[in-house]
Length: 493
Ligand code: ATP
Image 1 (tube, rainbow, N blue to C red):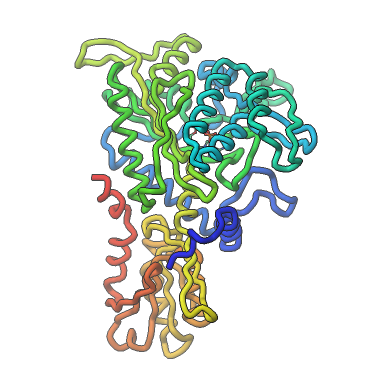
Image 2: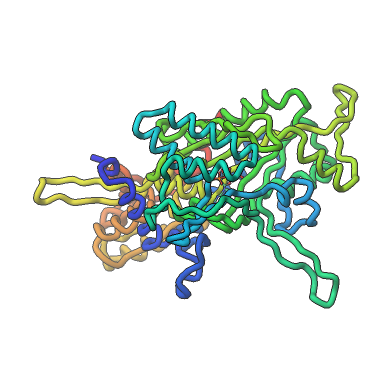
């Protein structure tokens, strides 16, 4: 019986966060100096999981799709990039402080949380009306009215419990630094707040060098930085994070058709990772960003509610046109099929690698109880898709003698060339199984005396704990079949 549903949501999330630290997935950055807020490091198993997520996304985009190529652009870009993209003028969040607790909040998040409370209480109309009103006020940049709305909704600071709020101010989220030595003319540069602009400014380089014909896409994985006002919920909202973005360039007028296609393809991808359908939903944007003519979020039900994991946006020709204007360089495509030059339209899919990681971790974390009431046992395991699991298999000789370790080593040495596997001989086999469950290893391979006689090993399956015997020579093929990305790609065809 799965116990997760019964654990209060905030306790469940706390359990997941401490599990992530204790078992080597995520550590707070510079923890020995009491940490740096909203910055995190990935441990031995976390870095493997993250690497697998990135590889899967990359392969999905650039191999599964014939019409998408990759790019790896720099974090620093010419400062005019951010003028053209609109980030210098409008990459702001409305912030508000509570005068008693001195805590800072995002005004829109306070209102969204209130709307979520109405929704939870079943008052969908009130929730929708509040979000609509907020959208209108933010659109009109009427920050005084946003504050009045917070007060009228009787929203209080969770720390002080008071509604003693400052006015609402806009706060730019970009980090800046100086480039060049002080002796030279130094220049203000920004740490990119999204990877997309690196793709836009390289549109012609990529199109020409890879001889791409519209429609085609450019995919990129890389760090992005945002000075988030409220950094909470662990790796959900970080100041340094990784994005996986794909810009798909299309003929003007065809963008909404492609938008609908990508919207469905991306949802399909999330389901193929093993996320249950009822934990995923679309959320259409009421308030569109200045560059978009359609936008939707893919949301996952985290223990703290449904939240955005990925955004799919129809960005029109806004970015390429702005870069053309600011750089004064023509950014156009000659389409031989229609015999015309034009600035392509763009549909983008943008997903946070860290948020995907958190989604997979929350979905994988399972507590299972069994046995009689007085004698109940709880088993914790991470049910990652085998293709994403950090460690694919553990090779475990039953005892430390009788030649079992030698046989185990022989198997381990063969498998480790192609798979991330672990060899372990200390502690009882039960304890070793438990350790692998806690890091989500899908298969434990036990070497026993029978192995020496007939070369068969036992495979224990993580989720069911069921066991089967197979020939040791078939292990490589077994792992290849079970842990390959084909398992996921087969569901996308
Ligand atoms: P939010 O509304 O949560 O601030 P956003 O709409 O600004 O997000 P986008 O600019 O669309 O987000 O970024 C695309 C994706 O990048 C998001 O869906 C999310 O997965 C990820 N992302 C954005 N900001 C952060 C962050 N501070 N920490 C981790 N991931 C982030």
